Length: 290
Image (cartoon, rainbow, N blue to C red; front, side):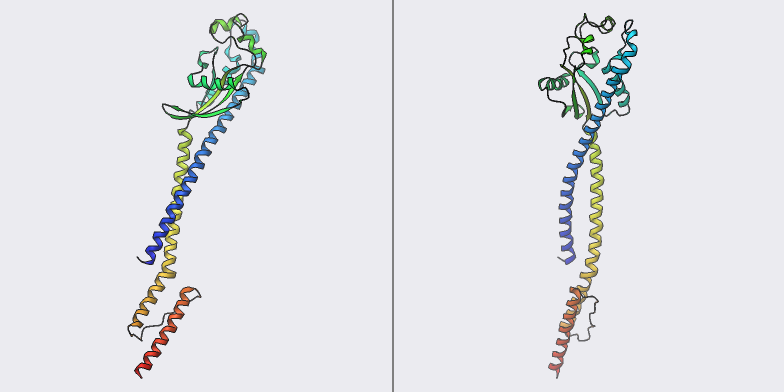
C-alpha cells in the first residue's frame, strides 16, 4: 500500500470517529436544548395566563358586577378569560395547547381528562409541588407538558363555587347546579397545563443536526483534500524523485542528475545525505576503474 493510500486510510478512520463522536454529543445537546426551549416557552405562556387572570379579576370583573344580576357573563371569570386569550394566541402557534384542567369545573370544556386527573392528583397529594413537567404518549407521538396547580387562595372565589345556594342565580341558570360547587379554600381544584408534541422540538433539533453534520463532513473533506495535496507536494513527489535517482545510481548510471531541494526540512536533509552517498559511490567506482 502506498504512502498516500495509508495516509488516507488513517485520515478516513479519524474522520469517521470524529464525526461519530461530535454527532453524538451535538445531537444530545440539540435535543436537550430544544426541549428546554419549549419548557421556557410554556412557562412564558403560563405567566401570560396568570397575568390575564389577575387583570380580569381586578379590572374587568368589578365593572360588570351590576350586569351580573341580570345575566351571567363568563368574561368576568378569570379562567375563562385566560383560556380565551391563550386560545386566540395559540391559534397562530397550533403546536402548543393550553388548558385549565379542573376536576369539577363549572364550564364543561375545562373538565380534566384521565391523564390530566393524574397530574391534578400529584398536586393534591404534594402541597409543596409548584410545577411538574413530563412526557406522555399520544396517538400522534410523544408529547411534552408542563403543569402548575390551580389552588383556591382567594375567598371571593367561594362566592360562586362553595354551594349552589350561595352561587349567583344567573350562573346556576347558565351552567346548571351539578358542577363547579363544593370547592374549599386552599384546595387544588385543577391544573394549568401547556403541552406540545415532542416531535416539533425534536424535528427542529434534527434539522439543525443535519446542517451541523453536513458542515462538519464538508470541513473534513476540505481539510482532507488540502492535506493530500500537502503530502503529495511536500513528501510523496520529492521522495518518488529521490527514489528514482537512487535506483539509477544503484544501476551504475553516473550521469543521473543531482537531486536538489530547498529548505531545511527532513526531505532536504535526506537529499543532502543522498548527494553525499552518490558522490561517495561515484568516487568508489572511479577508483575501481583505475
